[in-house]
Image (cartoon, rainbow, N blue to C red; front, side, top):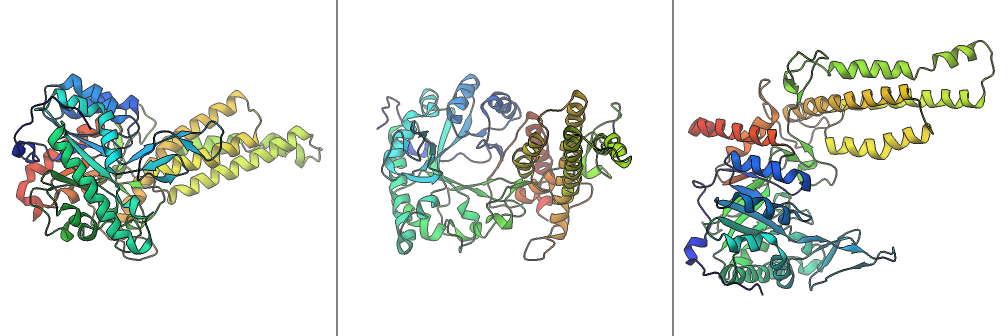
Length: 478
């Protein structure tokens, strides 16, 4: 049990704050790296964002350290609880070791566990630096704990008992969190889940009617937040399914710019609804352009591709071969390597017409392209190193341009193979991120939009878009 000397405020003061007092945008943090925390959080706070989500893997400790410097300031902090990593056994086998609790479920290569049981919740929150910070600043830090993807537990229960068992688990979890609200600095609690937006036929679908509503039949007045994916290509009828939910619950949309294929059911890499600011030309005096304003691939990429193809043309070796001169081993290996590199360059260039996900692009480079280059050349000279560095630097720009172009085409025309992919009239002069945020903003049932960011400029941009949408007022919904 969490010890507390804190004099509790009256119950009504612990209910969810009105969105009038908290800006409609929140800063997501599930994938942050520790080095990014300070500047991102500081920028968000400076821009008037008062809802911050803690990152995973020690993100709560990093966020607590940063927010302590911002106190006293009114901030709502979202803390996901459910997953945790465990240490690998020293034997190198598939065994794992560490602290274990009733209800632990192995979910990822025996290195990640999932648990929403009362014992684990008590342990996790006792250890959280954010809980300690909330005790220091009870009138300023509003700590909201979110049960993360509780449907993972359902997937490990007996087939004919999945719904009933998960509902019972959620009931026990809510009862424990309600106790912690009474006895600790915890302000309120809720659920964050990808399962809300999955179709009912999906094994990880989380149903409000069958799973969550039964858990709220008990005294759970401080169940205040439900967070779920909502974007142009990945949403369901969840908002319509909760008609009997308590009126005080707030609904937070997450991943408004990040979509998983096949309307959220695919396990492949997500793609981002975003235009990028890139150098369209090689003239350093020319301003950067947004990808939706560009008429073709960045000039730097076209130049780098041409230079790389020329560098690996093996012209001198081919000339010797044409003269009937027998090539030695090094020359034959160099010729084979050049042919392979030209083929690789051709393939990656052709792939630009299909790329949609930057994460998939990075995986392709790390798992296929780079190993192939290293396997082909034991070593290469300084000129070759410079050519490759220039090409892949420019290729990165070309990938961003192509992703934005291909995703825009997907939104406007739908999937090439047909199906039920929705289509949207994206204006030529509007960036994808504004169109995507506008779509979510128009949904009156959503109280807050949790947007992820990887650099401070994105946060400023999102806030400016939000101000623009706010200024449009009721005309936005017409």
